[in-house]
Length: 279
Image 1 (tube, one colour):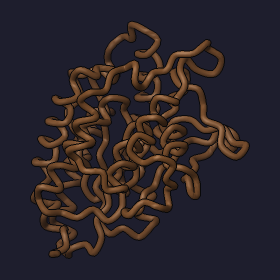
Image 2 (cartoon, rainbow, N blue to C red):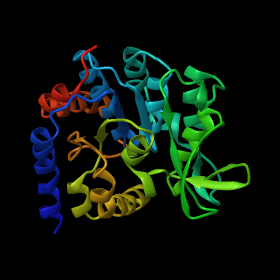
Image 3 (spheres, rainbow, N blue to C red):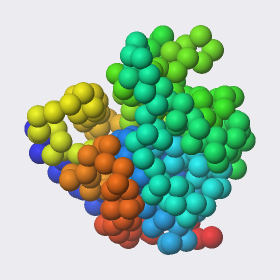
Image 4 (cartoon, helix red, strand yellow):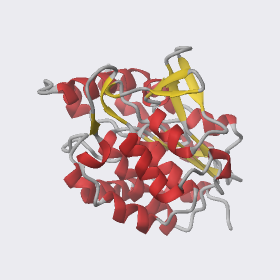
């Protein structure tokens, strides 16, 4: 069943290249979650920028929300890449006495504030959308009128690993649980052509977990994998960087992940060019 589903994504992309010949007026990109795999988004954005394509809106869940936030505020991809290549697990995982999680998201918040200070989501020059999962209402939540750092911390709070984020009386965890690749948000906001970037390791799904991080991340991958076709039907093109041989906490492999992101774009660049507005 999974093999049949996986074949449908490239088929959908090919069909769209024939069906939708008109050029889009606006282009948006939705960046999925995946801990350190999220650095592959940097390579995706680099490759798209090299084609002279302008992104009009960006959405990101979990790890994707970090890259989305920095990009939306005009932080250069060179700066983002340089910082990503210096990242270590200790920068992100601030361990604490377990109660609702093994670590706080303070390291993630500090990383965002390093670039953006206390900027709010609505201040972004490029429209920015960051969803999280609201445990109080058991529903997805799209942040507005909060600091970017708080929204990213909430969207990145992987259950069991990170302590949930409390904002205005609600408890938030990982946006990936219900909105892994937030393409639908961009469509609802009126974006014509949506690029979805998903980070799914099908090889990991077949392997036995060996530690608590494997158990948690694999559990989330199972949830994400079961709902991917429904989410991604809102994408006009789906880019999937190859992460099959890289663990979600392999911080030393960030340069390779960025390279894989650039590689993944090349497979779909003709379709993207055909829909890109002349500017």
